[in-house]
Image (tube, rainbow, N blue to C red; front, top):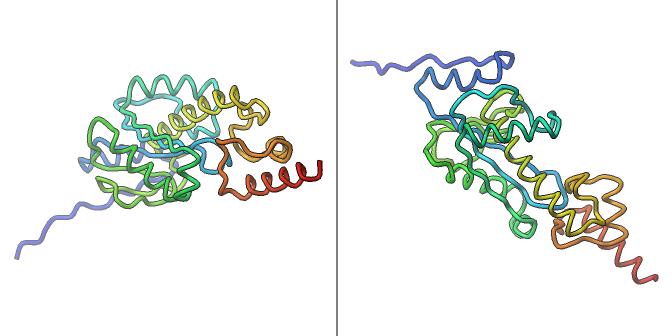
Length: 222
């Protein structure tokens, strides 16, 4: 009886460097590898942006986009779009309200991978598993801190979204979007209480609903 050969599983240490996952998968012949991440999940205004990235070469300085200075993110973003394959999906607030945040996030990850100009052999996602991807995948805890392709995706998603929020600030300067990027801060809460939500807020979020109610009550008293 012939016994099928099964390669020994790779063990990836979290202190083995940002390219350890890519190297381990490449040793199994699984290339190219796509990383997927999102920006704006916890915000109460603005879009959810999902990015998928296949690195075509190593890029120095990659890391969790939230831990990088804005100027560093911008510099790395320019290198990523130059030396990687990139897919980006922008999901507006209305779609988030209608379908739910998690459903939009999962769908956005599938759509971002589908936008890549070549098919990945393996996909790394940040934090949670994503069903329905076109290749085998692995959910990596804090993937943007330990996997280069996921870190690159986090940078693309965040820079893309930050630019959109700065542009939104020009339309609705009373909310301070350029500063807090749509996340909940004391200043953002105060703006919601004073002005109510704008069309780019997520009305299904408790903070926005509460601000809308307080604004309506205040207007009624006035």
